[in-house]
Amino acid sequence: KAGVTQTPRYLIKTRGQQVTLSCSPISGHRSVSWYQQTPGQGLQFLFEYFSETQRNKGNFPGRFSGRQFSNSRSEMNVSTLELGDSALYLCASSLGTGIIGEKLFFGSGTQLSVL
Amino acid sequence: DQQVKQNSPSLSVQEGRISILNCDYTNSMFDYFLWYKKYPAEGPTFLISISSIKDKNEDGRFTVFLNKSAKHLSLHIVPSQPGDSAVYFCAATEPNTNAGKSTFGDGTTLTVKP
Image (cartoon, rainbow over all chains, first blue to last red; front, side, top):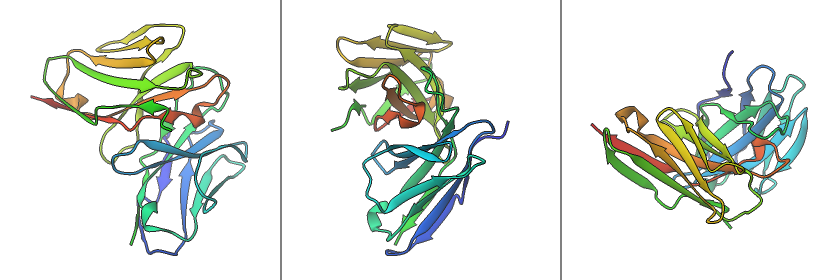
């Protein structure tokens, strides 16, 4: 089975611009979650999508948004970029059944630098 | 309010010795705990997990211990190998919450010296 694929791997943007990141989950996985990792900080939960619906949301401003398509692929968008948005953005997929013991499968991430 | 804390940002051990990575949590609702390992330029990968109904789970060189009364868990690696050098994240989930909404700690960077 192919793993979780994130594109692009690296991105450089300037303040005020917007960016779209893409994630293709493992085949058969219906849940896609997005996390932000900044230096010295853990993985901060952004949101989770399941069957094209946002099921859970973290404490991030509305500039961060996402969507999921019928094939479970997901995109994350950040508008009006700020310097503090520079981070590694990780996508994770799972079956999404909610059964205890389920684990996440992560992509390699998109490293976003905002100048 | 950080609900999962890994108070040691880094740990260095000699090859062959034991590595102990610690994790504390504040949310008593958490009922499942996982450890993920992350190498540079790669995403985290699942390592080992434990349910709150257990106090120990073992998988080869890796053992996770859970002390519910202290809200503390630890990951033991015995013996440690240079290939274990990575960032280790502790994560937790609540009942009836999907894995996608896991709460992670800040991570501990383990360095195993040959």
